[in-house]
Image (cartoon, rainbow, N blue to C red):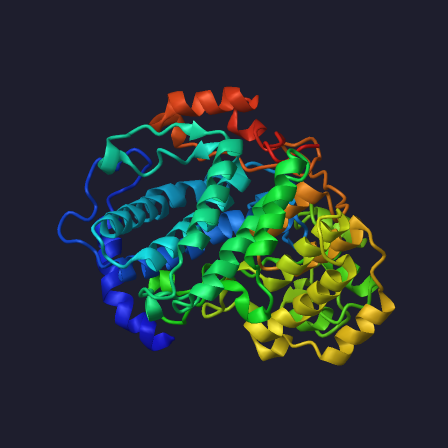
Amino acid sequence: MKNIFKKLFLSLLVLAFALQSCDDFGDTNIDPLSANEINPDFQFSFLQLRVSGERYENWRTVLIYSSTMIQHLAALPTYWSGDKYLYNAQYSGSLMERCYQQQVLQSVDLINTLENKLAAGEEVANKLAAARIWRVAMFHRITDLYGDVPYSEAGKAYLEGIDFPSYDPQSEIYADMLKELEEACAQFDAGQPTYGSADFIYGGDIDKWKKYGYSLMLRLGMRMTKVDPTAAESWVKKAIAGGVMDSQDDSAKVPHTDGPEGINRNGIGEVWLADNSQKMSKTFIDWMEANNDPRLDAISYVPNGTAQKGLPNGYDATTIKEFLGLDPTAELDMGQFSAVNTSLVTTASPMIFMFYSEVEFLLAEAAARGWGGDAATHYNAGVRAAMKQYGDLFDASAAVADADVDAYLAAHPFDGSMRMIGQQHWAANFLNEYEAYANYRRSGFPELVPVDYPGNVTSGKIPRRLAYFEGERANNPDKLDEALQRQGMPSAFNQMLTVPMWWDKQ
């Protein structure tokens, strides 16, 4: 894999250089690829790494906000805004900022290029299908964090002269993403070429891409269970019939490599090199301890060698001493709090977009709703996959023995409840924090206790979304205001976090 990264590095530098001047959403009335047509294989490689993300957005939206709001991680510094329900403009809008600067533009251009080649008779059906699925993977993260966002007109300033893209309603974005997944999965052709080794995720394996496409369909279908249960059931059944992930090897992940090569490094791993203030949340540690969960000592450790002890969310360096019963002048030993197994968060760790275990929990929930299958079978398969995934996909130091999984399942038989599925789903998405946060808002599980840090902007409620990138107030004000009015949202960015989005029906 390292050799593949090295071979592609110079080509990716060309792409990065071509795009470096596109600094905001509207600065796209320039042909970023005017010098030469970029090889779609290199462009797809670049896009996979770009969507995986750099330290900038992974630090801000993945870790500082998503992981702490979902109480997988906790941190004392006040710049860890999500831990305390504070508003930080740069951090909240960082994924939106970065995605529209480069990822969306690259995705639109790649798909346009491949559609033109297909129309000209070239055999690019498999490349186009994979690019369409990857576009959905990119966009559904954006809309699930922000609600209505530029979608149908996004990234089309050069191609169609649209400098100020409209914000599409989330319901329409979902409808189109599901359509795209259905069409893309049907478009694959075993007789045509693939991206081959330029595809870092599946190495050009179209069967795995189809499973990923249908698994995304399953995820998006289940996202609509509260707002449109009829459509949700229809799409879920269609996904299952198409064929979803059925093994750990099907998990969707972008591999990374150590070294000085920018986006080739895992952005979350880069955060661990720069910031060691994040610890395992007390909520997560307590839950694993209460259930005698064998993952506890696999995914976390205690730096000072004492018993596992999570850091509670919603505290700072001063208030935590009061919580612990310490004198205000006492030195705080941060080594007493459980930390993430460092082998899971290196610069060469994979970036997860979908664990196979998630698919099993979605299938368990679908079965519990009466949509087909056996809920207990899928639940047990999900627990087993979730307990094995860190050792299988990340590092052997996080391995959990089969005997330990067997003992856990025997001690915790499935009781048929959505609560039990939801709790395991939450635990399984550790290190896939965007999805953990989204599924929590959709399912309501686990029943997290909100924090009430002084000065928080949510009145002590867990945020239901992130606020838009504030640069849009200057770059695209009319379309932003239309979206705010349509969603019943306040114009003040720091007041947006408590407004549920379309699928987040309370």
